[in-house]
Length: 234
Image (cartoon, rainbow, N blue to C red; front, side, top):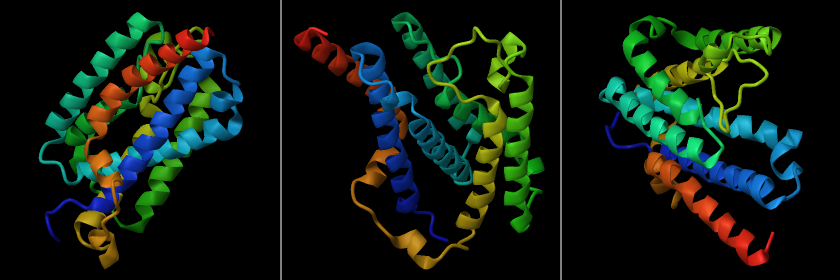
């Protein structure tokens, strides 16, 4: 298979980034401008959030198959995540273990343990990973909120725990690992020919710049919302 980037994957990542920006905009409008709470907290919105976030995580797992060094890639993302934590702590909405923290951890974890996970092959792999996702979510639901506070990065938390963005290791790690399995199929050229040749407009560029966009979008949105709040005297 060609070593060129697969623009459809970049486009899918770009689409998820756009949805994330809209979601974070809704968060700022609800919490800073008293917009209707359903804009961010309704069951439909929450469900859609997990769908596109799960897709973003899946694509990240796919991309791990094409990375020269998942350890280096993960370290870079973790560094960016720590910056996010520092900034959000000062503005009063701390992100303790958000999507970047999770992705950075997952890249490093897969980089260190890929030989084990790569043994899960064939079409039984999706069943295994999805079953582990559901099982771990069920176990966490039974254990929380009587969890152990300092294990919140794993998905165990107490009632006073707060993170403005929260994607713990469990159950999401299995979605990431499912992506690594799918990435093997893609890298081996086992998808339809159009999958490798289609060239969507605009979205691939956004997908390729996803980390940079993630780092700068929230300050920009926050500044815009605060400006609106001032001129509208809300």
